[in-house]
Length: 275
Image 1 (cartoon, helix red, strand yellow):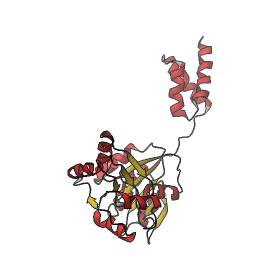
Image 2 (cartoon, helix red, strand yellow; image 1 turned 45 degrees about the vertical axis):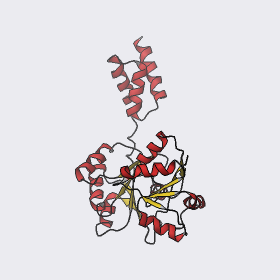
Image 3 (cartoon, one colour; image 1 turned 90 degrees about the vertical axis):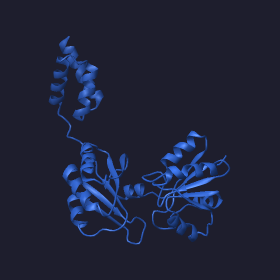
Image 4 (cartoon, helix red, strand yellow; image 1 turned 45 degrees about the horizontal axis):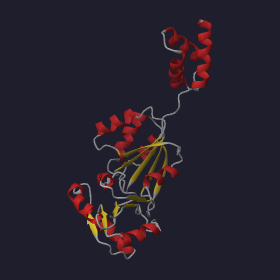
């Protein structure tokens, strides 16, 4: 039984590949590539002659059996055009089927536009939401962004250079004039990481834009914390309505900016007064 290796490949600069990835690309029986021509340039650069099989969005179901047949007796490396396979490109179905059929699935970490853009954005990195590619249709894009208005974690999305101007317009209209980092052509010759308010990004990228785009958008600002009188009033109102002191503490803590523990103390005081 073979192993399915998920091999990260360069997102631009061909030097950004691990020694382990190069060794495995030489040793596996087959490389399942999103674009064999694109991967072929990488293989030629490192003088690797492992056979390739085309595995992309439009043929992934018909090619699935060929990959599985190879796995029955040998190893397969799954690669995308750039970065980690399975993130916003074909691979998810193959991974699921391989796991279901008992084949080992092993990640070979490496370059990722997602993490590269995030850590250089200057925005919080402790928690984030990955959106993949933003929807192509403006109505669907605005609907998605509207659902994220209150999301306080950093937002990360991929976007086509052709739709960047429209996407920035929709971000400004739905999320407001937040801080954003627009990472373009990461690790390549004309790499650009632009940082600033969305309104200025819209002006900066108003003309023709080329290259792969990763957007890193600031999350929603935390609402100002309530003062003690507001918290006490809300606790009293909820408890007067029959809400238990524990549930009242939970509900008020969620909207007030206070810790649940501190609100709970106020509910106990209110209960003592009522008693």
